[in-house]
Structures are given as structure tokens and as C-alpha cells.
Image (spheres, rainbow, N blue to C red):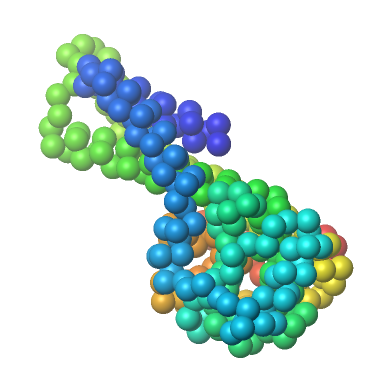
Length: 279
């Protein structure tokens, strides 16, 4: 999060220096604060709306409801609100600003292919995200990465449109540095966002296994989910890292270093091996 802050301030400062306008830096800071406030209070509603989720009831989803209720008691957490997405792709995610305002959402495809032990493993994984405060971390990471990309896009467009800068000998150097930073900043922001996501997935896997005391349940669920190549109809890059599995479907062989850098999730094989072998 410190890296994101430094990048935002750095780009804002370059804008204000090149265009001789301190107001640009002030605007960038104010805008970033407003984006964080909005994302903090309304992130769960935005995500649920994006994926067309609807509230689940105890009467219509008794087994899932009881699993969530029992595991919430075991974890010492308030029971999150439960939502369902009508989608054949097996997946699940947790969102919300804190444990008192958390949401767990699963797809109908997940409910169709998992047995009770496997479903308990997935729910425990999502509850672990809530208990570990990953849902807030993930939301802030999305907002800041998007803001960095927005600033860099504005900078590049303004230079292409012939914006005027400082008329001194350092102008060319500053402009070149600004363009390079504007190109690399969103890439760096995305890599940091993905790195946060991958690390938290491993932690949620292990925490979920401790919660159910049955690692094989989650491991089996991950095998089934990983073997499915059906992408979600509402999949998008902004929320992909929130899900237990990549919502765009199986990404093929992810053994190369470059591919792993840009993955929102660790390879399923590594996650299953960590659960089964305790690596």
C-alpha cells in the first residue's frame, strides 16, 4: 500500500511540475481520497451489482445456510450475508468493508458440483478472507491500481495532445521520465495488486483448512473447480482477484515465470499441494 501511495504522489507531482500547476497535485490527492471513501462504504454493493447476485434465503438454500452459520460460529465471526449468482461456472467470493458488513457469494455452478465437505471447505476459505481482513485490502488495492492507471492515461493523452510544459532545460528530461513512469505505473500497480491477491489466497486456504480441520475437503473442491474451464458470464478484470478461482476459466499451463506474474490466483496445483502436503 505504501508503494501505491508513492506512485500516486509521484505521478501527481510530475503533472504539477510539467504543467506548472500545483492544483493538479491537490486534485489527485483529493480525488484519491474520495475514491477510497466511496469504495470503503459501497464496495460490496458495487461488486454484487456487477455480478448480478441475489440474496439467498434459508428456506431455498438450507444446506449452504447451515454450513455458513455453523462455520461463522466456529470462526467467531458474525454470519455474513449470503448471495447467489446464477452462473454455471463454479466460483465464490467474499466482499465488504469489515466482518460486520461482509458478504459471501457463491455461484449455482459451485453448488451443483460440490459435496457437503467440499462446500464447507470453500465457505471456510471465504470466511478466512473476512477474518483476515482481506476483503478490505483487496478493495483498496483495486481502487488504487485503477487510480494510478487513470492518472497515467491522462498524462499520456495530454502529452499526445500537445500540452505545454515548463520552458527550461530540464523540460525534456522530466517529460521523458513522466511518460516512462506513466507507462510503467499501471503495470507495477497491477503486479502489486496481483501479488497481494496470490499471497492472500494461500493464507485463506490454510486458514480455511484449520477452520474445518479437514484440508482434503477444500483440496478436493479446488481440484473440481480447477478442472472446469467454464468462464463466468460477468467476469471482469476489476474483480477477478476476489474469487476463489479465476472467473475467466482455466488459463492453461501457468508454469512460466511471466505467466505467473500476471495471474490473479496461484496455480491450482500449488494450492492443492500446499493443503495436502502442508508445503
